[in-house]
Image (tube, rainbow, N blue to C red; front, side, top):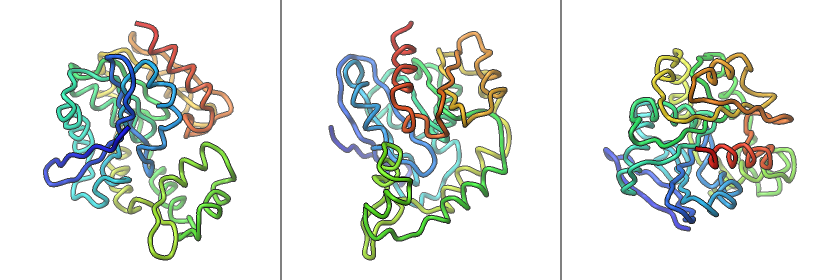
Length: 262
């Protein structure tokens, strides 16, 4: 297990290589304000049969904090650059939220590179109202946190979900701060929400699993996504948007079943 880096068009990018067995490679793409190591729990079992690599997407974590380009094209090109850096012919893409959006755009635009697609709590539909919701939620964090205990308490107490969010903070003078700049994240979200991407979704050719949280993605949108002949839908009960962190056992079951089937 090790950190990897590359530079693309002057932008520093980082990824975490979990290693793993088998020849099939899985790339994990976190959501907005997330980070590569939030996938630790997923990687712990996935590496038994796959090589697993998690990206710190641009604007997040160890990657460039304030890149000049936060467009959808830039995020997709980063995935392609990582595959080139790792000399991968194909990979299964697993993405949550904004990471899922990046994953399906990559599959649509570069079908020869994607062996399978798992999209969790992401959709081709646009929702401009989400921009202010996200800005307000991130802006309400009582920054800086004095330490880990205070941060865990703020995120609801000890849990996989809270630990993942707290692990994404970084120590600076004065306490713990987010490893991102809110307005740069809003730049990324704004383009994703400014228009629908159903045309791109229609061009996804690979096998696809749509994972919806019961308290998350609208069921009508999820069913429309899964109406393609190569797609299937799983709804995880008692889960919200961060389904992989809130219901890790159900998440594992959904992914394992999909990855076993051919």
